[in-house]
Amino acid sequence: MMICRIFVSRQLESMLGSIEAILPHAKRACVVQFNAQTLKLVPQMRNFVYGIVARKAVNCHGIAERIANADWDLTELMSQHSAYVDDVIKELVAFNKQLHMINAVVKISKESHKILWQVCTEKIFNILVEGFAGVKKSSAEGRALMQLDFQHLLMNIARLSGFRAVPGKEFVENFIKVYYVPEASMEQWIVDNRNKYSNKQLESVINTSVHLSLKTRQRLFSLLALSSGPAQK
Image (tube, rainbow, N blue to C red):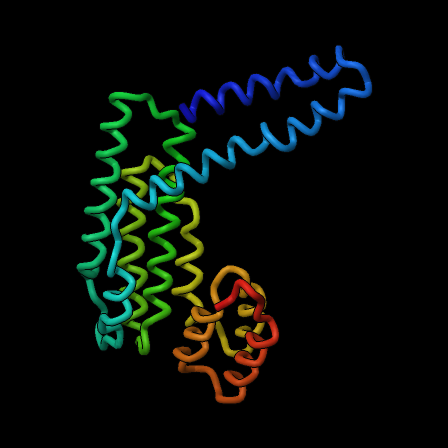
């Protein structure tokens, strides 16, 4: 049904020029209003509905807590990814099977398939960052394991979804790699990313970046306090 609405809205949108041309000048404003208030909202409504479906289909309850409570203060490099990654992949495999089952009954367009997977991965990436932000202490070896975990997850997302490049991956990569940002560049990093991450997540970065001096921490906390908005937590 949603795919039909998208198709109809696009057909109507392509006809608006012709419809407007045959209408009296006084009525043309109605066509513009219809396009802006109705047709333009149909794809947004689709994305909203797909978002609910994808988020409900993938159960990652407790993953953020498992990440936050794991030991990341390692003294040696790991060659095997963490166990929580396998649990996330199991959910993705189940999600992919559901899509195939639905597609066997009702054809899922390539565009819809892409949106569903984008919403699904966005949910998972948010959970990962929330988990990493809850880590109290991590060593260079621990952060290497975070990267190993994420790369293994990305490989499986690409395999299951068909994405050549997984959209939104920079959100997680950027957060993991912040610990390698020099002290002199941290203020600019905070400024550049304060609308991407919550204040809670940015505070975690400041608290757990061991290379920062007390003076730098205080300055960065002051910067966050000044930039806090209603949406920040």
